[in-house]
Length: 456
Image (cartoon, rainbow, N blue to C red; front, side, top):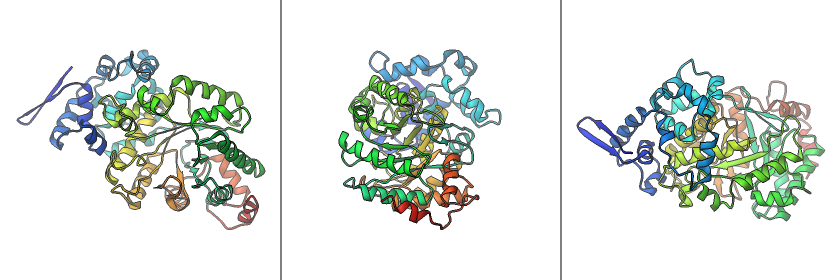
């Protein structure tokens, strides 16, 4: 079905819903690369006006990818609560935006309605929102997840401690881990991207983290970010807390990662059966990023932001402990500069929270992007205000294994200080017990460094 809109003296025609969504998207280089972006801002505004008048029911009647050809589309269709949708079926996309921004739409109400909206509806409404709107609505929504500690509570901010090493050297990894712990990082997860994705290396690194965690009774979880099939191979004889996988918004894109929903289901059940959590048993860790489907030539002509939100439907099926948008990691071909990265990060966080996911964001950029650390400071602060569940903690912001720029241990101190945020409650008590922070959450000098350094 085509869509028309008259703006001034000009008539604009959008050939179908895919085209309308793509043309309504804020500018990003990935959509330009795909040849689906608006030709200019006037066309973009016309598309946004046309989109604002579209009834939400349109997204149920015009499917972007056929359910016969795509298991993600089938998942979206099967999981949609049609009865709950009745209460919002009268909304247009613009009407949904107005409701979300109203005082009536509390975080609790939005959470209760999450299964009424498809990813495409949520993507559509985000395209009509200013950055301020994305922050305002996301800040209302609290999504709590639990394993050995509790993430997502209001007034708290967690950090993934990321001690990557270019040759997976155990002493280098431990040194970075201890450095991060002494800055109060690591409550989200101590997560290593291995330089070598092999069962042997995954076992070695998981036991390294397990020995440290148990020796000092650290209430956190570990993860080696190997492929899900590698984790499944070692899961019976290795201390696997969280199972990791990168995911995308179409069956073809997920197949390019070597996965499908059945593989994820098998891994999910295997990790749950271990029952290694203490305060909860949410065992999955997913990472996503705008542009991944396009890079795999598996986007079906759909804009990259809508494809990203479809990936959140995959994540939601498996009740994850962590979902992380690695927003600037894929490169300037998809998000060209700091402005595009900032917009995408705010969109991803808002859309993930709307889907009911415990969202974190890797506030990052590659060295060939038109961005710098000031851009990341801005996005990190905006997302902190928006209530992002967690960020990355990388030594000096520079990941020497993945070769990109992220956020540092010092950034965690900055955000918790200026926004009056605390670590996860269970982890905060441990930091106090170890003498790393005081009861106000302030970092202090103590014997903690000497105690922890004995672990190397």
